[in-house]
Image (tube, rainbow, N blue to C red; front, side, top):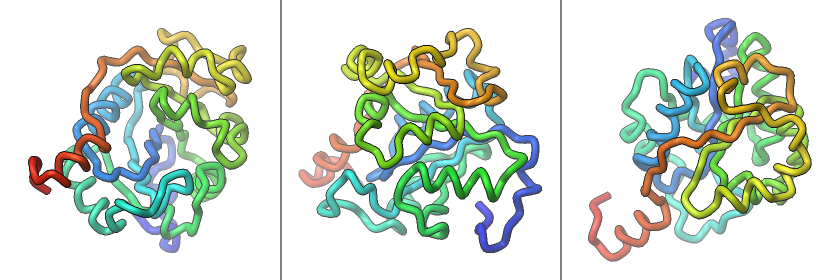
Length: 207
């Protein structure tokens, strides 16, 4: 992905881009599964994986280096329309709200959609300036095993309950004025970064 220091926003003018943020520690088939589903269900042109230098809500212990996580993300993505990026490192941003503010300024003619799992919908009220996220870009929430029901009854879902879009309108989400969000009942995928790290620690899964 082009560096913001070599601004090339015109390359993405008119495109719809889904933003999937996270530590990607490590990236796995579940991330790719959700990204492919997002491309189809939301009518996206691209999905960018925002590989975080350091998630402020996660400990540094056990976190692979950014270079290692980026390398694995590129290997796992393996798709011309899915692009892992460390743009948060280049922007110097830590919080999602700040990253979105910078990206929407750098790419004013690109329509962004924030992508996240139901687990993050449940915990997003812990994020810095979380309501700004909903007010800056449309949001798509994906089903996650055991989290979905609790997330839909949580603070964020209730706060923006009137701005929830029916799933059958998901392909038009990127063109809606935020706040606008949709909950997608996507096929579930069993992959878990935590489980992968534990398996690797036991030596039962190769790096």
